[in-house]
Figure 1 (tube, rainbow, N blue to C red):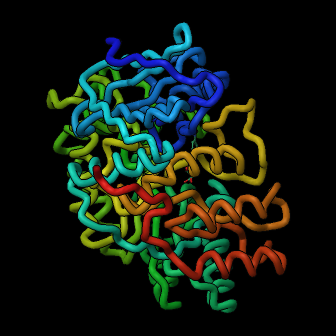
Figure 2 (cartoon, rainbow, N blue to C red):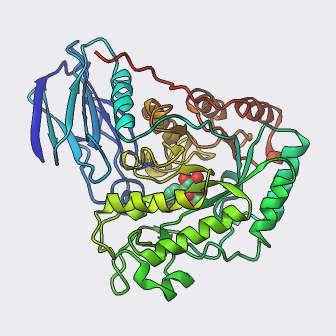
Length: 448
Ligand code: 9PG
């Protein structure tokens, strides 16, 4: 870390914006006496934050982006990586004797506005320029989605899907895409092999398309189960190599491996998985846990992790034609220009508060925190996905969650079992899925 700036602030009015590494990493603006959100366990640190950095809560730390409003009218400062296609320095702000001292791991841009705008406006203005450099040329309006995850989780069955396809059709809900989430596959890595709860992915797509809707599917292309056929047949496709595959997290009762995006055969397999699904009728893809492709570790080709991550996502993009691509569990800044829409927050869930107070974990409040913190990205980097509306009576503070989706949802999805909705739930689902905003939620002031 190298000190790059320092200035006096009004300690009672100053604010610091911290940008988290990936979709699920807490991202918000703090007062100087707040302690920033940090992981409650090593496991959460690894899977929901930047695993290679561990800043502690006595310093503010942004991954490639940090903003400060000194609170004295002297203008907001934005500190940010110029281009995130190869590396993303951490940037820190520490309070030292009434002054803020900024330090960073590498070279970054420092921008200062003329004093009139809010931090959000300054971030929006920075994002306009960053998106331009990343080659973003316009927004592709998102389709509206129904997603299986937040009611059925990994236990989803083909019958559950059919029940909801029929319910959506009977109620004439404004759903463009019916999206099957995690639960159809036998193992991460073996994406074309189905559990006995599913008969045929192609048949499912046909069933959805017969109702005039489009078919969508979830996949975690860069995660590999150690007990998958892929890991057993092709251990050389893993980051770290056959003899020493790196740890890519722990979930689904397993330690996880990562697929090497520089291994040509591994990428040929991934291209085949996606083009097969596309041929079967899927044209909406939610690619999840893609942080795994950016983890450090020995690769087949000596390409830097972030550059190789980007190559891996481009391989997917090329395999799916014009399909709509939604990123999730994704390093945010390195993904600009690669996806149509991005999950910009941790998962929602029926609970209002997150487990152990870790704001990277599923809950209504953690999804609202970070979805609000990243609202400026919508309409600039991509379409923001704030996560799906869940509106069944069981959801704590469901009105507050619906209000967040109404205000900050660019991609609008529903993820209740339709039959579990009461009158209010059905009405708000119909209302929120009736539009898909593409215009920015946060205005940027003109360039000076
Ligand atoms: C499917 C889900 C849904 C959801 C995604 C993502 O740290 N974790 O172990 C962890 C597990 C699941 C998760 C996020 C983190 O949720 O955001 O919408 O698709 O995967 O497994």
